[in-house]
Structures are given as C-alpha cells and as structure tokens.
Length: 469
Image (cartoon, rainbow, N blue to C red; front, side):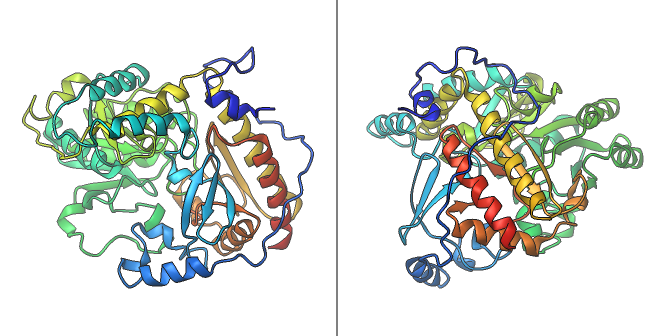
C-alpha cells in the first residue's frame, strides 16, 4: 500500500476534502500508537572522523558553512553520502530521518524523482548559458502569481546575494542610507547585516565579525523582534533617514519564533508613515509556510521581498522583487547596478519550477501542517512528561522548540534557553537515527516525503531521549 507521501508526490488523488487554502493554526492531534525505535548508543563514525580530520587540513574548521561543524552540540559532523525522500545516509552506513532538509530547500523530499528527471533532461541542453532563457520567464511568472508583493523579480544565486541587493535597492529608491533590522534575524553575511545576526553568529558566540569595518555597520539600526515600541523609538530617533526595514516574518535563525498578531502590520504602518520601505526576508519562509509565503499567511504585503531555498529546488538560488516602480531602479532598466554570471541559470530554474509545481498539488500544505503539528506536539509532550521546561510551535512545514520556561518572542528570550541540554538532546536523537539542526538557534523543517511512520518513530525517540538527558 502506498503511503500518503508516495501517492501525493506522484500527483495521484489525495483526500477528497483536500483544499489549497491556508493551513489552520490549531493544534494537531497526535494520538497514534507508539513505534519502537532502535537506539544507536554507539554510532559507527570511523569514516566520518577520517574524512572530517582530512577536511580540517584544507577547509577552515573542516566545513564550508560554520554551523555544520557541530561546535555548539559537541562531537563532530556526520559526513553525508546520500539523501532520499525524508532520509539521509552517512558514509558509515547510518540512516537518519532528516529534519534539516538542506536547511529548507528539500520541501518535496530529497532527490525527488520528478525534480531529478527534469534536471537530467535540462543537463543535456546545457547547465549554464550566461544569456536569457525562457525558463527564467516561466519561474518568474509562477513566483509573481503566488507572492502578493511581487510585480517584478530578479534572480540571483543565494539568499545573501538577494538581501545585499535589496538593501542597495532600498537605498537607491529612497535616497536614504540607514537600515533597520532586528536582533536575531539573519540576512546573510554581507557586512551591513552582521549586527546582532543570530544563527551561526549566536551558535559560535560571536557578537559580530572581525573584518567588518565600523563604517559598514554605522548605518545599521536594530530593534527587538515582536516589540513595536522599540521600532517606534528607532524611527523617532532617525526620522526621515531610514531607507528600509528588513526582517524575517517568522524568525528561523534564532530558533523558530513567530510574530505576534499585530507586529508585522504595525511595522508596515510605521515604515509607511516615515516613507521607508518594508522588506520581508522570505528566504526561509518563502513557499514553505504557505503557497503565497508568509505575507499571504499573515495578510501583510511588504514593498519588497527576498526569496531562496525552495525556489531553487535544492540548487543554489536567490531572488528579490516587489513593486514594479521600485524594481525598475535595477539595471539595466534603471541606475542601480547588480549582476551575476550564473543568475537565472537553467538548472536552478528547472528545479524551482518542478518543486513549485509539486507544491501546488491539492493537499500539499495540509500534509505539511498535519505532520509538523504532530511532530512538534509530540516533542513538547515528551519534554513535559520528562520534567523539562520546553516551549515551541510551528507553521506548516517549519517548527522549533526551546529548553526554557515561557513563550519565546525574540532573540533575547531565545538566549535564555539551556543550550547545554540541547546539545545532549541533539546527540541522543542522532543516536536514535534522527538528524536535527546542530544548533539550538535554528528552525527545523519537514517535507512532503515525511510519513506518519517517520513522525511516530521520531516522537518515540524523543520520549526516550527526553527521559535520558
């Protein structure tokens, strides 16, 4: 018998009452039978250790992105060999249920057969043109149709590139210099953004980065997420000087933190009154929490948005876009220069198109909501039953929790969590065959390939690990 995920991903009919509407925010039910797991208290890691030791002689810290180094959770990285569906496999032959999903892009599952087939067909036609191709138009049309604020879009190669470009655009359009961001929100590693940036910076305990001149961050202002009073104070002190506001509408780089009911709309009103632009950084939330991204889910339409991850279907990609009058400032239509050798390359466009096609099928977001709700409620209940202080939540295929009392509304709240306990939790889950983000300051992700059995096994593992830490 096919699982829901198997039949869904092939485009077969799903539940008769499946709808494409925004998922409900109610608590998911998790009254299912427990499934025994096989604890791996002694993971086989000899090959991973050998490869990582060699990597450290050639790559800074042995990795190409800091959080992968496992420094905040202890031990050393697991070296991947392959991925498929909801699973990842390391070089020592261990199998894991994966809740990182390449940090978000693998929303239809790893190595999806349909995405792979489309990519293989495109490879025969060429991997990079450095010239216009119709695939750019096709993907642009899809994202413009789905994302409320998009009237025009420019494709780039990463989330960092999208965010640094949109900052330049906000300054060019308004003629102003200052930028407002929020503590704990990460918008890539461009100099202007490395101020209270959360994520990898918080994981490594670095307040900011050496090599960033003071002049580069002098125009970067910060406020507290979910605190409109702090936003008002910054605007009052810098009236008529702020080019734009950028934020993660749902924070994923301080752990998972959702906005309060009035926060996003309040920021929009304050920015408009002062003549500043509002940009939602939806590199993480884009097409993950809703078909029309966070701006559709919360009913707040920004002036600009940045995208990445999901729109490349697992290939390097980024995008920024918004109102046409603003986007016409971008070269060659306007004077603001931005370019890229591989921007709009046919492989990324192909993978993005197929991924968004799959997400558009009936039942997609309902499936993400159902399994993610069961997952996080199961983890939180396991923690409470074991006597731990835990709090967390989810929206669609994005979730997170903290070892702390009370609601977490911002990075300052997140910083109160027990990160040492999280490290023990992470190792315990790894030994039970569950791969989680190796940082207490990262959100988790599910995919259309995750099954009810995956969730059952993960919750059972969570119960056992919570009792042991």
